[in-house]
Length: 213
Image 1 (tube, rainbow, N blue to C red):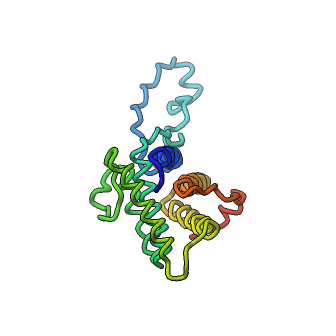
Image 2 (image 1 turned 135 degrees about the vertical axis):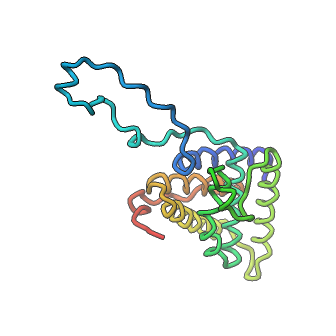
Image 3 (image 1 turned 90 degrees about the vertical axis):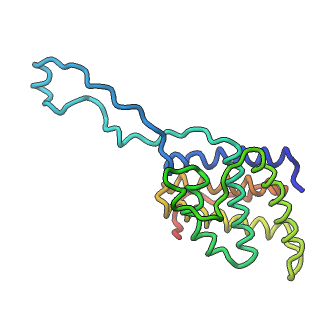
């Protein structure tokens, strides 16, 4: 069974990896724009009445705020659900649920109405305990497969497949390509660390972004 420390470290890594995604799915509250400073009549007549000298607020990138480890653990639990789905031949079902389950896990406004009961919701220290238990359950499934025990090499490739699938799901949710790829890579690395795996050598970003799901 993964140690408490391994689960805590994996949850923290997952939290860092999912933070940019959360910034896109759950935008931070922005302060109201400051009132335009008074401009002299001469300058205003030269620049025009609509000239403010400020870039449009809508063009600003979303502010990335820290995600707590409990949320990271909940996201990682959902990722392990994907690994179990792959092992049972239900990966397509898991892929189709990401766009509803992930916003609920991340606390997106209105996600309660859209979310499914299968979504993982942060619940303090219990979430870390669930992560440890579920990781052990995955190991049990791997060791009891009819075709024989799954070795580290096959598990690494299954995680790599899950990484691509998750990145594709994020892109379909409107998350930018680069953010989708990097977040999926971090979650894959965090999940692999629960099983003592080092992350496989990543493909180039351009190669990953060339795929579509």
